Amino acid sequence: MSDFRLSFEFFPTKTEEGHKKLLATRDMLATEMPEFFSVTYGAGGSTRDRTLSIVTELNNMGIPAAPHLSCVGDSKAEIRDLLNIYKENGINRIVALRGDLPSGMKASSGELRFANELVEFIREETGDHFQLEVAAYPEMHPQATNFENDLDNFVRKVEAGANSAITQYFYNIDSFYYFVDRVQAKGVQIPIVPGIMPITNYSKLARFSEACGAEIPRWIAKQLQAYGDDIESIQKFGEEVVTEMCQELVDQGVPGLHFYTLNQAAPNLAVWRNLDLGEES
Image: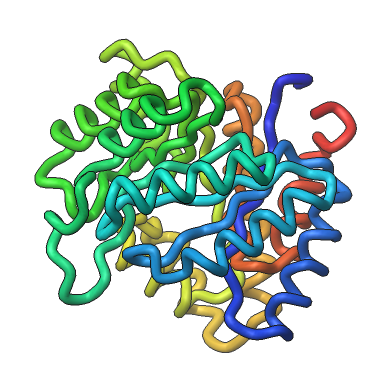
């Protein structure tokens, strides 16, 4: 397990109180010695300055930080400036994404329209300075025209120069295996790391999943619905479900796990520590 990688994702906060909570969460998660922390980037670059501020602060605290960088709505000059700032601040990993479209923005906005174009541009500008992560969608990107096209889109990102990939979260484990099998059959050899979303609140999870196209299997949804407002039971059941899924993924040899933390420590640490991989990984 020496090459198994662990990473955690944060989102930029809007308040000083939120920022203090994020740093406290970071300190708790840092005890597990993750390979890196990633920081998201709002639709159309709406949190660009906060992402930059947080990722540089985190990167100076002992564990590398990786900013999300999206290309929708940004010019090449703006992206070039950001890349230079990240290089100057010792950042050497980026999560390269097309990015979500803000309300009213057309998909054609910006000089780079797709993630593979962004990856190619970063490589042209910075060579091999950055370890480039890209997104993978085991259950298809919600805006993809069909699954085959989505697979081809992923392959294009890899061919453009991606080093590894992080998936959208999922609870249907077969979808992950199928996706990996299909893209490997198309020649993809980079590590594909499962994205993990702990279950702590059913209504929020249902809303997220509807937006991003992640299926909540019927048996999980029905049990969560049955608990109603019993938060303790929801969290206990969620921990069991996600731990079992992660254990199977680990047993099947996935290259790592990437936790979508929602800036919380406890639910993610519970699942990770249930796997009892900390000392080995």
